[in-house]
Image (tube, rainbow, N blue to C red):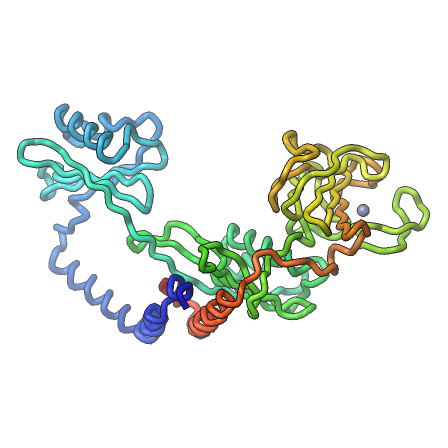
Length: 419
Ligand SMILES: [Zn+2]
């Protein structure tokens, strides 16, 4: 239960329920407060006394400070405290912001805030002797889980449908990476299929800053529902698991390049497009324009890199005692990836091309199991990062709590789960 507590405590689960139930009341309250304030402080709102400056190229701390009426002594004092107490030696263009607060509309600057990131503020105040001091404040990340769902329409790709469902591009790319362990986008995606994604949105002081991770993904594929949950184990490692707690991240990817069309499947007999006669096709061909970066399907060690008449430029990786993968027709290799190099899953090893016996640019991908070629799309792949009994029990409890909270989001798609 320890890990469930970290991610979604029962107390927090209560908060979700409260949030959903009390959503209307909260909206009413916020509206009331805003209305009351604007009436009482009209013409004297604190915003008139506050200016936020974006640091641009060519700006320096002293230039900006003197623009806002600070004296030479102030500037030296501020620079000194920033350097010694906050470790800040200068400003970064297009990243840092500076906020100036005045006492009243025409009063002197009484407080300066340097904002180096949405998660940190450095507040500068001046004492009566004219000495400035700074105080670094960490802003707590407010993470909200949001729910998006969509459906594949006729002639659609998952990418288009995901866009339509309002899933941001970065999240969609992560979803592809995850589903690629279980699905073949070419053969498993049809019109009418539904999918959903729960992901994190990070807020700082009420403003959205960025998106976090994919938390749950569900896809009604042809072969059945594929569902994965993000879960942090008791040793703090994060992985994705199916609803039963089996590792969803496999040692190899079925499709090393995302969203690529399969132009030729694995078969024991096919007519070779260049040679003309029938022979086995020992891999899968993915359409890929010349130059498409080719990632390794799994972690491993490069055991061959070279050229032959059939494969053209090829690279072969040994992943473990059982599996090897081969990537052919490459236009180029990655310089530092040579025989003996240890690569990570997803690490770029070369670039697609049409070298060797190829009618056009594509990736020819082979999976070799115990020395025999197997179909990458159907071979049973071992999961990495499986859960032990204790973690599995915690995972199942966590999943149940999360599923209940998501039910609330399905009923009310505009709501979110406060983490
Ligand atoms: Zn091929």
